Amino acid sequence: MIRYLSQVFLLFSLVAVTVVNAGISISPAILGFSAGPGGNYRIPITIRNTSKEREENLKLYVESTRSDQDVTMLKWVKISKEKLQLKPSATEKINLKIKIPGNASGDFRVTLYIDQDEAVVRQQVPIADEDDPGEMQLGRRRSLDLPRKFSGQIVQTMRMGIPIRVRIQNASNANWKEPQLTYGRVNLTPVKRERGDFAMVSVVINPGFYDTEVKGTCKLLHSKTKKELKVAALDGGGENVLPAIEKLLRCHFKGVPPAGTYLTVMDLMQEVRGSNNPVKKQLRARLVVDDALIAKLEKRGESEARAVADGKSPLMVEPQLIKQTPKSTPKSETVVVTNPTNKTLNVIARFKPYADSRKRNPKVKVKPQKFKLRPSKDKKVKLQIKPSKGAAAYGKLILSVKGSESLEVPVLIMPQKVKLKAAATVSGAKIVFNREKELATITAKLAMEGTSHLEEVQVDITIENSKGEAVKITQMDGVGDLLLPGEKSSLTLIMGLKELKDEEYTARIKLKAAGEFAATTELKFKVDRESQQVIQQVTQ
Image (tube, rainbow, N blue to C red; front, side, top):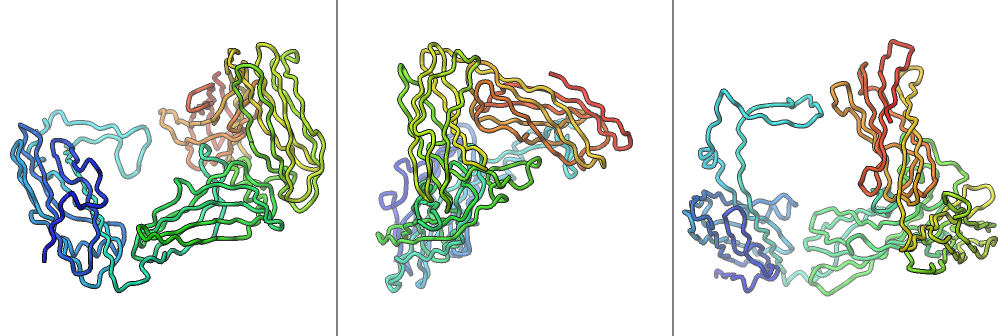
């Protein structure tokens, strides 16, 4: 018996069931339905040529590249017509036939593709004049396999795809509601700067036959007391893991943890889609955070490839940034300081202002200024700041432990009535080669000027050869995401010279904040491995 499926019974179709692209209208745009083993289904699909002048020649076929399970479905699908010739404004219906084997079960996906016939389109494209060939520029980088310029004829064709999802439930399989997911070890990994400081990740694979959803949270715990030090939800609220597909579960965190031993925990809820049978799952792993891992998480570049000093602050804080734009008096702030170690720590808290003169320094109260912090315990530090009249209050709450680096919390209090202007300079660029001339170190000085700060900061450097071609594009080290008024820092890049030939180069250094250029400088230098001289010229 053949079952006809109309748009009314498409369980997963959108409200707008028609897709229009380049003069072709297809309905429905998405197909999804539940089926039974041994079922025989016929799905009508309407294709219309919306152009009033152009004839369309189309090719229809079904493909899948997701998994072996989906590839199996290709054998079940047949199209009533594999080629269509549509006159202007003409409409034609085709049938998609799906014959399901009696032993099949699971979620299956394929895509019905509708392409313009390339052979017909090629005949319709005017032949270019041989004496005046077209030219395509492929950019400024050279490739060994592809010339920078070539002539030829480019034919552009249109492709549209209709996703098809079929759920086959076998009544004899009583365990179909049970999730079949397998998980990898929980680890910490660096992430893109705009996403945070690091991520907790685990690989999940679905060896079962049904789509399975995973939701939950990630936690970083004290190794002995099991206190929650950091908590974050899975990115995107979770993942839908398809059969035979590997996914990466990931939670993003702010603030790289100090060196020590922690417990990483993922509290998950996994559920086969549509089963209404959620099942809890917990992943736990003991993790040692050492100097090498901290350097990796902090995305330190070549110039800081050495291990992070043992003196790094053992404290954790929340929030890691204080930012206000008050209409009148700023509200007081509370910073929670946590001791993730197994030792009692003596902590000193103080505020360091950043201003263009001492007269404009804000009035600040920090309570308490000294305190003891036992293992896995918290302490609330209250911060009350009153900016000077007509000025913003910039600075850092500095938390110090004897024998360790200080932990800094940037503070930005910017009254709405105060006009602020950010400015920065990059200067003093120079290059130094090692004795073998295998490595070069480029340095520059960055200084903040003006009355405002810069956020989302990065320093890009582009090395161009004498022809103006970029041979290296990277970022310099020595600057954080945030720069306060009056701050200064040294920029550094250590690079290998294998890719640089003996010739003249220009290093273009650009400071960007929130994607916009804030300052720039240039350094011209020459690589000459035979000479003992280093030739360089700085352009401000």
